[in-house]
Image (cartoon, rainbow, N blue to C red; front, side):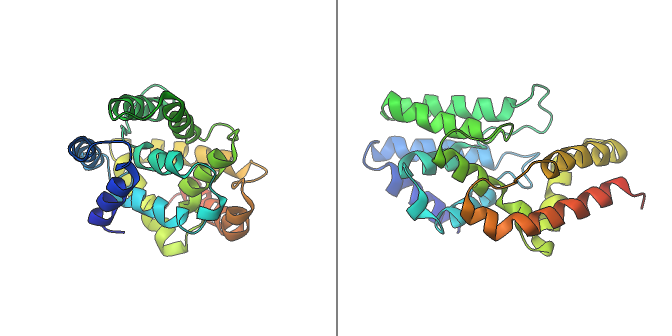
Length: 215
């Protein structure tokens, strides 16, 4: 999906509750945030586009489509690889979403759902709603990508953490991936579990091996 296609999707999604000029202003802020250098080798609009490509395969499973699509647009709007507080990026992304969506006239009840979905992408616990579990699986679908795309993703993450000394990066990255491997399931929804679980575990095992083996 091109950036123009994402923009078109944004306006189609928001046209019923926000004036076009304000919708354009918010889109410009989104586009600017996701394009901010440095640190956006992976967490950029290409990632958002990939999330929508995954979503479009499971639209029949979505309960609140408006909230899920808004959460996709905003879930990485704030991203700083040097953030020192755990989950700071997700929490700030939720705050930005709440502020901008309230200014656009989205009811507080819907804003709350969107921010809850964004916070689910902290990946620190199983989401409590079906839409939350679906969004988390969409966000993690890259782990089950084919090898060339998976290793390209890993290269992009390394670029985002280029400020970290290599041995420290490898140690921390291995620990994070080992944490995922210890889970009973990487994917909580049947669709994503069946499609990606086996490949994702293979990818993560290969990554841990690479991160823990001297080259």
